[in-house]
Amino acid sequence: MEIKIVRNVLRANDEVAARNRALLRQHGVFTVNLISSPGSGKTTLLERTLEALGEKWRLAIIVGDLATTRDAERIGRYGVPTVQINTEGACHLEAHLVARCLADLDLSHLEVLFIENVGNLVCPVGYDLGEEVKVGLVSVTEGDDKAAKYPRLFREAGCVVVNKTDLLPYVDFSRERFRAEVAAINARVPVLELSCRTGEGLDQWFSWLQQRREQAHQRPAGA
Amino acid sequence: MEIKIVRNVLRANDEVAARNRALLRQHGVFTVNLISSPGSGKTTLLERTLEALGEKWRLAIIVGDLATTRDAERIGRYGVPTVQINTEGACHLEAHLVARCLADLDLSHLEVLFIENVGNLVCPVGYDLGEEVKVGLVSVTEGDDKAAKYPRLFREAGCVVVNKTDLLPYVDFSRERFRAEVAAINARVPVLELSCRTGEGLDQWFSWLQQRREQAHQRPAGA
Image (cartoon, rainbow over all chains, first blue to last red; front, side):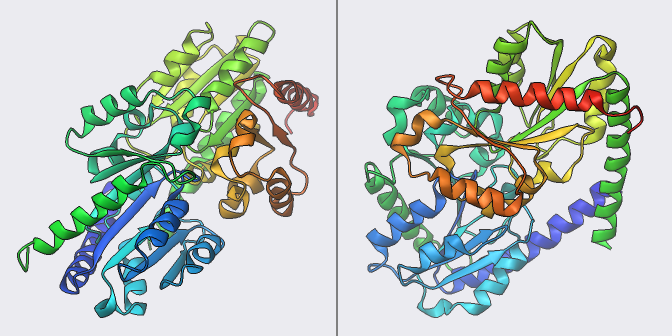
């Protein structure tokens, strides 16, 4: 009985997510759902991305948090449209919350939308928001065992970003072990190592975004 | 309708948690529910604790993970009874899972039980397991804004541990800001700064455990 209810909730979410996706594709908006633990660097990665691409692309950001508007305030400094969702305790974003934000954004003037999910390596993965691609972010300080221990995100991610590589000298993190464990779960996913602090490796992230956005645009209409 | 169902689930959990708590208190077992994001250092803190207190106290560990038995293998090296719970995707432990583990442990020979929850700063907080006290663990690499952004854990924790202080020189983490934000949510909770890597500050953690365990023992029977 409980399982049935949970399935209905997920099915309802999927229906709204499909409507979000259709709307975003119709307007040619490339949408990224960014998922990580608290403190891995989602907001900082978006700040670096806005600095590099904020003038080139027409961007908007939806920021999910349990409480506070701090991340939206950080992002808002870059002058791009930013919508904060406060989940008031809920552990993930859902498609209907994103749908309400889309109604507030001028999609016809938008090219790229980033959705910063609630900091949580588990629950957000189960909820499609209508994005084009999920990006899984971890930092080297969290240890090299995260893909094996939290496999679902790594299975569904279109890109894995490893942040805080500037701290590699001070922590026990084997890049080889992490990459091997990601590959065992998802052989094709790119793994991009970078440091939002020093800027090292960010170019790969910008290239990946550009490439995936072009691929999305080349999709035949209605696909 | 959905809310009602969720409430029933939580009420059922609370009933099992109350039975766990009564059973543990009856056997004089002091029980700690350890909650943090993935990679903050829960397992490492337990390893350091077993090294220091494993011969002094009769300890057991329950380890929750979505997948793998890696943490239980790490803990198992110290020769204490260890039970791994694999939640198979679920984002938190629940009281009935702990109840099954308690049936496998010889409680009459036990003094202290640590429950290492699933790595998640949100969902585990809502589920009482029957513990004496919740400990919230963060690491300095996650940023100093975690108490304000994930307030419920900090409101309910009997102790806040700040790990990885050896990385303070390399990250932006204001100890004053973090402490002020914790105090605004929970004025009485102790905040213990330590490094499981260098051992600095671990003595405070051991003292706190000792003190809280003695307080629990002094509780009048049936309280």
